[in-house]
Image (cartoon, rainbow, N blue to C red; front, side):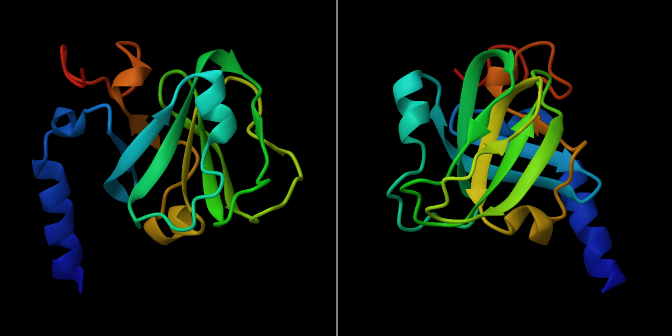
Length: 158
């Protein structure tokens, strides 16, 4: 068991961080290691309003990245959302500030990410705990730009 964990760490460490930078992928790195999600991007008001409403199922390592023009206090609800979701609220530099786990399908209760949020990643409910993702971990995606904690290599992701 310890050998398998060690081998997994070596494999993660051997993958260059910039290798996962693309508009349709987002990587999270933390004490647990590293994981990459296939994502759709919602970067305008219409796309953000639609989000994952009416989606009946989502592949395990998939999600949606909501991008805002500037850091702000953002709130979500689950109206017309059919699957439980984890919401990972991130700063402009990619740091995960807050995680709301297992948002309840159809619930209209407001879910706030707090101040300073510029990106929100929605993934399958319960997955952040299963993977060990926590506040303080870091996201990597071209949208975070040059000031990101884990910036993409120049000219990547476009």
